[in-house]
Image (cartoon, rainbow, N blue to C red; front, side, top):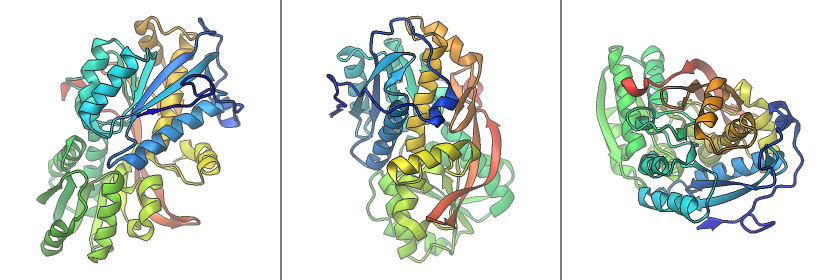
Length: 400
């Protein structure tokens, strides 16, 4: 499915003036080829288990472009959005369409780690300038790193590792059970959490797995009730996270067992807003928080535009726009020399809603602050509140 933003052809030529938030980021430079539209392709999940997340990611990018008057570095922007259905094969097909049929200048997006891994060779062979907004597979910062792929987001290790540190220091040295979605991100997140937790001396009990799209967590929750863990580490995202948290409450486990997970489990916009009280007390490690200092102005603007506090995916779409803007302005709108674009992005950090974002020259992976959030009651309902920050977390990279 192609998402069209017509004022002309497939264009999303936003007409809103730049806001104060955008103005703080910097004024656009005069660009080479300023009369030629800049075509940005975005592949995200607009159906399947990550539908709400995909819609938020698209909204974040649209909001950023609207604030910039539909132009970057003096060039009008055409945004073409495709649905990968959270399926690797479909993601590959949509990336090939954008590059081969639509002739986009930049490709971006992706929520699923499995999709991110699947499209790596496609964009590398095409030498396509690529910005992965959320797909957090570790290997894209390691053996599958590509000179053409920048990731203005975290790796699964960055969240699992910090969660393991926090759990050992604050939750307990033993009595841990894990439960997660059985796909790339879930496996990596649990593996990285367990490795971090055990390295410090922690002891982990049973590890439970559920297929993507699980509707009934009853058998697994019955096992959890029988095991009586001190705390649980979990990874679920999108509608899976919503169902899991609701059923935790139905089985009267909410409030009895401390729950910590990667940020997706307690995403502010697409999970916490849906489950409300069933999220209270939960902990997560994430590169995003609506209450982080770097997010203050964006959170207010997003609430005004969407009537919702931003979660990771809405923020990720916006941040991807910020990084793309920095890249093309630093080369005066000329993307023909990919090496110069890379050098420009590596030369200095980009100021983003996630916080200051330098890129690791080994793999083009963002180095990020990781927040420990606790879901607390706020003025408008449950909200992710930052209770600790791990500063400048860097993935181990190719040596891992």
